[in-house]
Image (cartoon, rainbow over all chains, first blue to last red; front, side, top):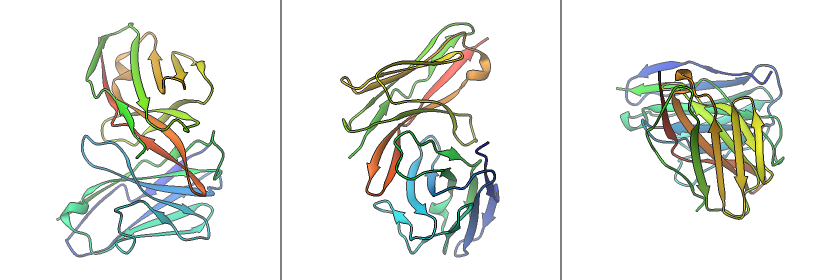
Length: 118
Length: 113
């Protein structure tokens, strides 16, 4: 159990276009979903936390108007990178958790989406 | 600023040896600790978590936690070449109404046949 999928796995786009990435929990309901970004040889950096039915909470330095997050259901969250630029090229990874505040809660990671902006 | 520190490595061990990975964290209020394995180009996968002082064993893996020293480690017994990966230490802390994980930069482990 606890499988998380992401789509697409790879995307190449032109500078200025918008890209939508989907994150789905396949066999459980995810109260909370997280979006991370990872640059080469760097660790995961949390971008935002989203709870179903409420607005996402963004980390300091992450532009909420550029990285739009929608968590419309307990199994789906989307991240839209608006007006993408080459510096947005990165590995975007979502994770999902069943609960919200349990200290022992485990995050289950999706396989990631590699974005290349030309 | 919540910080999680790991030696970036690479840590190289021969096949069959014990690999020891270490992690320190800055937030004394942190309550749970996770070890993830990340193969190159892939997303992290959970190995195990620990939240009580002492040792926790799962197969070839043992996590050790010392909250007084703000130190958590992962031991891998009988290391295999397939264990070669980057190991990420993650620490839970409360961020308002949600908990969050702060990740270390990871330690690259290479197990030599």
